[in-house]
Image 1 (cartoon, one colour):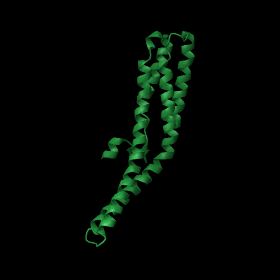
Image 2 (tube, one colour):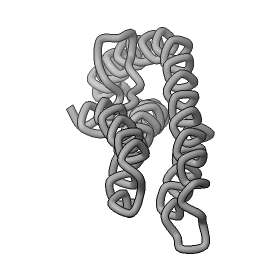
Image 3 (tube, rainbow, N blue to C red):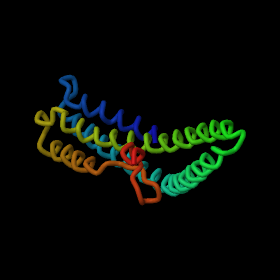
Image 4 (cartoon, helix red, strand yellow):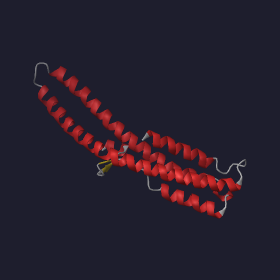
Length: 167
């Protein structure tokens, strides 16, 4: 996932440099076509990651939910035990570990989604008005294509994001 985000950064950088004065106008057309192909490859690669990652994330979140429920039950039971403070500390530490793991999944999903939005912004902020009309059209398609954000889901049920982590 972080590799995809790095590729997105690379495309953004090249989009911002597409209309510099040292690049010929004819060369801009081939650069735009190359960036569109690269953007499509990023989208395809992200979809492959989503297919592979979705079921793993679902199983992970279901098991984390079960673990958190069991930890809550263990904490309630350990209140009356003589060594309850030891069990309580262990349970809280384990809960923190499970929460960090869930946060990592959600953070990566949020990071991918925010980076994918930035491609459209970079294409819009490029000096597209200095390009030929057919090159403008190509950039327009890139902007439209990037409006559908790349996301990671847990079993196609829920999008992994920081908002969902907070819920």
